[in-house]
Length: 434
Image (cartoon, rainbow, N blue to C red; front, top):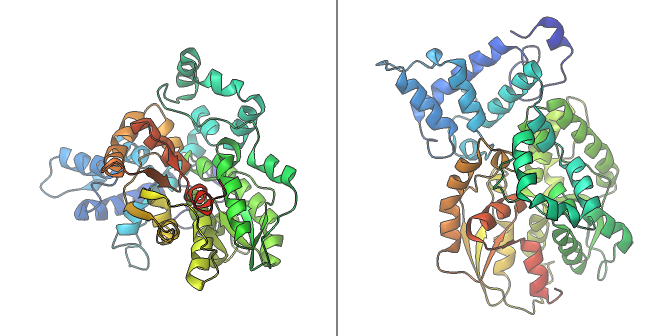
């Protein structure tokens, strides 16, 4: 059990369990074995990630006629925790999630287990590095393009693997010479094309800001073409990479900063438009918990994926449909974290509105999860998990591959050599603005 003094000084743990006992190892293990027992008796989720096969194989290995998860060793439990890459698909499909009396939330329980472990043992250097994309991004962009050249050198990649646990063969996002935030400031005030019909405050995401600012530029231009006024409040990483490594205190600090920064804009009537499905999921589902009881968090319906904002305009007749360029045959990857939001496929709906365009949606996991797929201990399995997605995306030789998640796009590019474009970049091209 966590020492009393240590638990008393712990940051809030808004993940699962009673507030007083969330940090206690004994309470965590009781909940782990309760949920594992339910999962073991069901076994529906065996194909989603490595966590469930690890549980089932460990139970079967003990050889009892009646399965007993109580006999799992700490190492067997830890293995299942480590193999969860937070795709959330088990939660989407599970018949026992709240309000069911069994109240199973497997991904949240895995986050809790990592948080308790990090609180007991400390956050590893690997997780501190991967959990702070703002620091890495600022340094990388400041030195670009030199930083990109260095990152491709085999001695440097060997050193990163040995010191930080980032696999030497993992393709990394390239750093931009100018961040999206710098471009937005340099560009000046928002310029909607005509009478304003809405206002959005962009949460750009770390990947867009430091690695793919072209997505942010496309978003601004498409929003303004559709008479939306765009603001870019100061912002930090959403906090999910920190949570992946068990650093709940770091995630909460980022959440509180972003909430304080965006609150005035929401109160002025702006909706929050998020340019990455993982960050959108965090805003909707994690920020109310991370902020804590009595703290402000935006209503869920005031936060939307960037494509979701435009799809709403399409549904209400407010979208500019004067498209000038057909897009051909598109294979569209539906990200797991968009599915976890029950947001449908807004990007696919938008692209299907472009004349001369067909869209084939592919609902498969990329096995990336950003930080998880970069780690040396998970790299091989991450790539294996992506194979069915890549095979289905490239079947029939589509004209272009499109997807909302830049890190899933990185995984696909590594597997097949083809770039995956963001829906808003493709939509801007359809307007003839690219």
